[in-house]
Image (cartoon, rainbow, N blue to C red; front, side, top):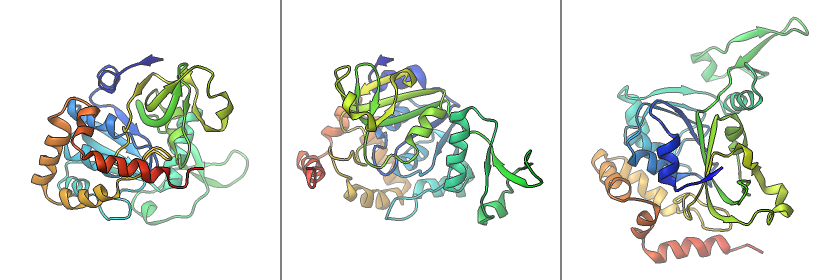
Length: 291
């Protein structure tokens, strides 16, 4: 396990044409990694994720992706992903859509090293568009629907902290973070902080990933903004509303990317563009209710 900057981790391990999974479920979304991938000009990526939201909208607007594998896409609580919608309608991005259950089953198959995962699920609108393959059960006469494994080339995630041995810890809503990490060939992690080896042994219930499965750790406070890190900083709801307005206009979207991604060198420069009182408000809001 290497300790690298986000820039160096992306430079070493993210290549054109890969299948990437930028994990996180409402919080702990690795925006710093996504912005660095845009900044380094990666192309022809497959972006996989159960719930693409603003980060994937920004990456698609920047032209990094040819394909998106997903089970829900939207600006949570606001509406559509406008850049994603334009790209799909223009035929610039191919989509492969699953139900949540199907996509998580694909990750489970990938994590377990299995050739497929059986499903017992009712047909739905998605299956009417794309029929599921079926296999005959070896234990009876039933035909069972199956999905193939999903094994990202790289899963990138953000977490609360890691220790010096690379063990990764997080709490709150984790969604499919662990499955996406265990299914991947490589895992890159950004964290708010690194703590001494052994200092988190009494936090085993928050252990997300053991160090031997981690390729690199990057210390990057605020790497999840505008999403949140529970107990550290709150969700920047104002920006989610702002992005809906910005992303409706391709010129405004490009201008935002120029200012907040292309024209800066790293996350520290990104944070300097936000009013300190706004960041302080988000940090204070996260402390409300913390015992």
